Image 1: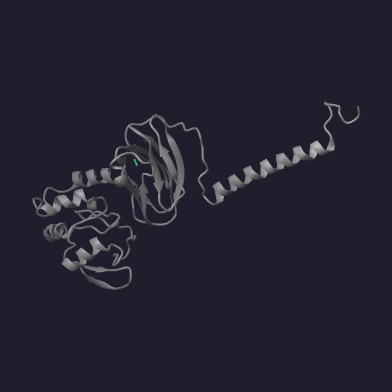
Image 2: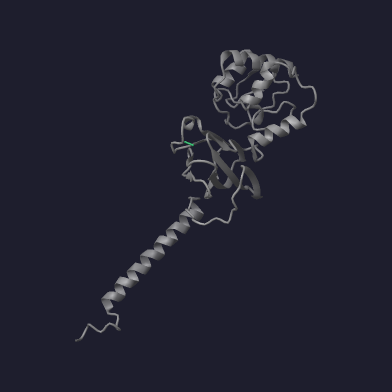
Length: 271
Ligand code: CUA
């Protein structure tokens, strides 16, 4: 009956157990190493974030942000997020109707937005630029157009585009340019004012105040006068001539020739 004593652990079993424990330990250490040194997102299951009704961005430390995102047919709230370069964001995501997806281009964040559930991921934005967010779960007729953008730049204050837009409007003096021009409204609807102030306040992009006819130095060391041609070029190919000192963060937006002309007409009045 030797070797069959159930109480006794044989040398071979000991080896197997030891190997299994070592493999587990190494595995956990590798995950910890990846999370700390490479900033990889380690999936977590439980969050202590309470269910929320609307999107928000909260600064919780130096370059640390907590972002609540609400997905619903067919948009994300917030849809425009601005963060300083080097920020680490904890993103908490939920849905108010059907299941949506939340994929941030250029990162490994790929979350599901599920009703009554909060999913989360941590992401560090080391490089300036525009990170496009798309819904990757078919959610109905507006699915294709369901997207958002995270703009990371060296001179951004963290904010949601909507909030910043509201601030810009609230803080704006009564008369800027000719506010009745259709181009003025386009700056709101196209989201321009989220990054470009109308009253000389610093923003992600250069202020629009006095922009028409201004001489700008560009990142490629050239310089030029802001005229019709430059404004048109900047809207259609934003990365071509970026004003020095600003991140190449401007997205290419769908703006028609007619709308561009209206925007130019307004900017001419914004002295
Ligand atoms: Cu939301 Cu697809």
